[in-house]
Structure formats: C-alpha cells, structure tokens
Length: 204
Image 1 (cartoon, rainbow, N blue to C red):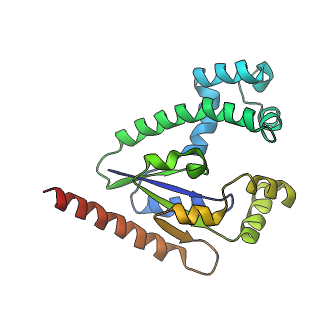
Image 2 (cartoon, rainbow, N blue to C red; image 1 turned 120 degrees about the vertical axis):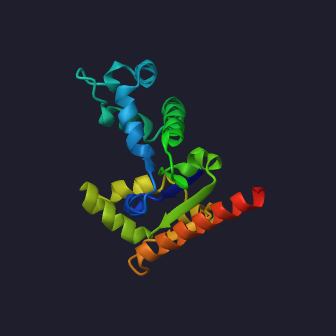
Image 3 (spheres, rainbow, N blue to C red; image 1 turned 135 degrees about the vertical axis):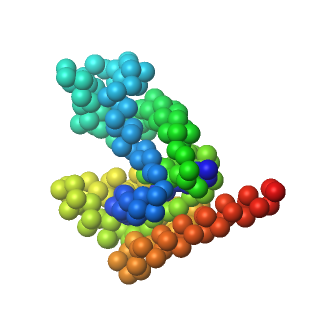
C-alpha cells in the first residue's frame, strides 16, 4: 500500500477533499484529530506535557487546558518545539499502526496540516497539497471558528507559504471555487492507481 499525504493551509479544505477520497473507498487518517485525542488518552504524552508545562495543562477531569497551553506555545518557538517533540512521535507510531491494519486498498491517506513543516512528508510516498487563495481561506475560517480575521492571519503566518507547499507536492488540488473539486480528486485517484499498477508490473 502506498502512503499518500494530504496537506494545505488552514481553511484550504483538506477535510472536504479527504471526505471525497473516502467515498472512493480510500481510508483516511486524520493526524490532527488523532493528536488531540492522544493528548488526553496517551499516558506518555500526558505525563510529558505536565512535566514540561505544569499540572495546569490539564483540568481535574483530565481534559486538556487548550487555552493555557496555546498561550504558552503560540509566541514561543522553543516551547512549541517541545510540545511537538512530545506529541509528533506518538502520533507517527499511531498512524503507522493504523496504516498496517488497513487491507485490500491500493493506498491510504494521512491528512495533516504540518506535513511539510514537521518533515513528516518524507515518510509519505506521494504528497497532495490542497490550495485556496488566502482571502478565501480567511473568510472560511473566520466563519467556521467564529474568530477574528487577525487571529486567523496570525495562524496562517506560522504555516509554510502556499507556493512552497505547491512546489513540494506531487499533486495539487485547487479548492478555489473556480475549478470543480471532484473531477480533480478522481483524476489524482486514477493516477495513483496507475502508478501502483506500473510499479507492480515493473517488479514482475
């Protein structure tokens, strides 16, 4: 099975694209969602976060105090790197176990916002970038999350520029309201199938 990564800037529509791939029978691992779950489920993560960020990182009921943690790491690169070094390895292993459990599919997809920033893309066989213009992404996220444009722009500015994501990708899906989304996804799906068939034939 191939490992295919999907990424894109905040508000680009990664989840929407992944849902279409799922209708084609392709399993999707949502790394960011799993990270959130593991941060309240995995004892190694919980203990390391408490050790590095204090007991206040968790409420008494075991839920993560996201506001507390966000305020610490948002403008502190070293603290953010510490948090990522705690969470990313566990998410990676969780994703690997998930991938190995999949059966009778040509490839799996791992969706993550920071594939390129974290270096995780190097572990993928192919990468897809979902692109949407900044203004459109800004409008989507302010409406979706009910937050100010300034807050969204601050988050955008911490991510890799879109043109760099496009350059690093094997495929680009334009979710800009101009190009139809589903035909682009179907085309990439077929190209991945053809690539797998060619790889199998060349080894025989």
